Image (cartoon, helix red, strand yellow):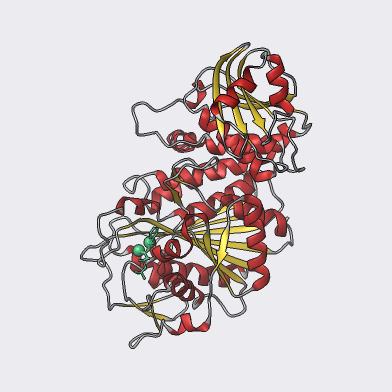
Length: 508
Ligand code: BES
Ligand code: ZN
Ligand code: ZN
């Protein structure tokens, strides 16, 4: 029995292991093979590009002129057979000193260019351009790892990461290897887990299998305690809102609680995530266009679980707890209907206006539970809550809602540092007023256009008195059509980097 369990756990853990090896060495010019170099924007070639031009008898200057390559940020040019190199990737880094996100983007672009290469070592030269202190070689490697992500496990032509060749970053950053292997590699593992969970289809990832997948990742990590609340537990706790959402599915709901307490008497951060493993809309059924994307409606739960995974893997001295509110929203004879009244754990009753506004229902119980169980210093919920947020701020920002200015500013700053940015949207009393119901204490949808703010207000109605709280609506950023340097097309795992940074800044 134990052997079977071990084998199953190993299989579950597999997708996050076996990545391309990335190592580091002191800067020197490679003698041959494949190289990637940064090129600063300007009239003439400078830094490594100028040196390479000299080494190749003027071939680089000729190529960039012919290709109109200026070194503008994110511009790339690949040359083959420029002796003595089989392949040269030039990547523009712009004219300003490269910052942390710039270094990550450089690494991510290198990964994108070398996507199909196998067997060879990609040699990335990280020197010769102006850069800020935190634009390190480890950041380049981190960006490479993030940009190298792919979800191809169901495709015949899937790539075996172990045969894809290795990556070497050549720089004079002395502690690059330890900053990467001991730290940033773990954040990347968190992002990978989040992306995997979201990309998996709804027939594979449902509440219990989400729990199993995540639990396997925490195997052997210190200071971690995992609790799984099943339907009986949810009933005992009076979580009628969460149970209601799950009642239409043959796959029962779960509340996954991951405690990582390694911070002694430091304050606790609680993170609650919307974990709808598939959102059909329920009886208020969605149209079929794009409905497949609702397999990713558990991004919030994936992101909060993965943030705690990253913290536990890197052994951060923090106290953080993730709550993944898991359910599948399906129409059936046992599903909830518009007009139904549910009683939440807080005792507040909820009239169902639309069964498609289900995320706020599971979160109403999760945020209440987080408050009474942990009295956290700060509570943040993360959810693909509304289509409305995407219409308001587009794909470059998540919506941030908070009535505490300090917390909002801290999150905005962490977002700017990581490139996972938010735009703060209003959460005034008027949005709470829209939730008044004729038959219950509140209803789960309002009228009018400010859907993202109304959704935030609904969750806010269940946040305990005095609880410092923020809500992140990530429905516009959880998936990208347009590949970006560190987020290939597909589910992005948006929020792991942001929350990891926020933890480092304010809890370590
Ligand atoms: N999961 C959706 C929100 C969503 C939409 C996420 C698009 C990602 C992309 C959510 O459960 C939902 O259906 N929200 C409704 C709320 C409405 C019924 C009040 C919406 O946004 O239309
Ligand atoms: Zn919905
Ligand atoms: Zn949803």
